Image (tube, rainbow, N blue to C red; front, side, top):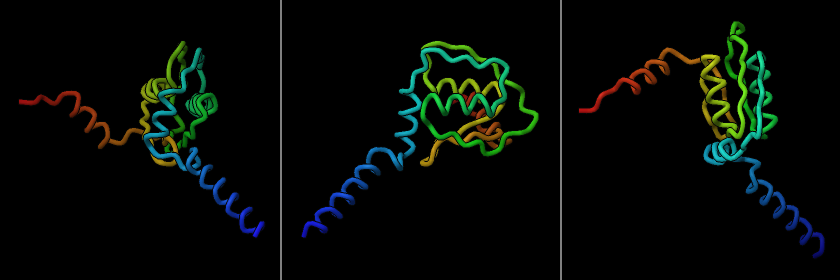
Length: 128
C-alpha cells in the first residue's frame, strides 16, 4: 500500500513539472521573452551566434540557430530596460535574419524570398 502511494506522488510531481514549463507553448515562450527585461545589454561587434547565445542565457529561452549564413555581419547593440523579445527583434533585423516562436523555443534563420515578399506586401498594402 505504501509503495503505491509513493508512485502516485512521483507521477503527480512529474505532472507538475510538465505544467510548470517543461513543454511550454508558443504563447508561454513569447510571454517569457516579453517579460524578461534586461537592465542593460551590451553587444559590441559580436557574431550573431554570440548575440543569440547572450540573449538566450540572460532570458532563459531556447534559441535555435536554424539557418544562419557564414557571411552574416557582426552585431553591435547597447540598450537599457529592454525586453528579450525586443532585443531579439533588433538583433535579427540588423543581421537581416528572421525568427519564429515555436512550441520548442525560438528559431532564427535567414529571411526567405517569400517571407520578404509578405513583409513588403504588408508594409505597402492599401485597403480600399
